Image: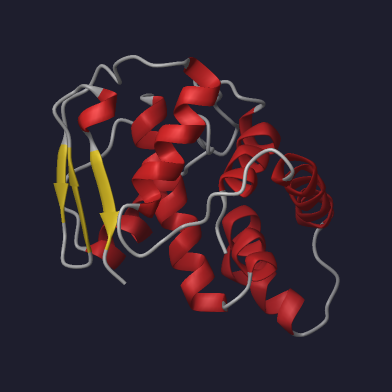
Length: 177
């Protein structure tokens, strides 16, 4: 299951908690989302608007949706993390018992080790209704305290719907499974 501890561990490994992080592959923000990752989320959930990946809250929403999509595709947290970090090619290597690239081979245990340490503190799991919002809110509050996301947005799609008024606490991120 996707837990708050897992998301916090990913944030630590992906960006070190820096919402302005930018990688050489153009991955942005807390969850280090790439344009391809955004496209996958938009296509999977029928979302027609583009997120502001510099906004930590929107970045977390998209990152969690992407991880959840990969989890649904692979049926495992390890498979989802491998896809998140290395894409479909790395997942194929893993499934065929071919060694992962060094980056992905190092990424996976770092995230899982941090998740295990953090799981003692956090035990919320993704639930079919309201789970994503609860996790995003919890992670955002732990990183930044309460406040505003600074960006109005409305994202709607067939399987998911997002509604925001700019105030972080009023944004709804629900996933209907």
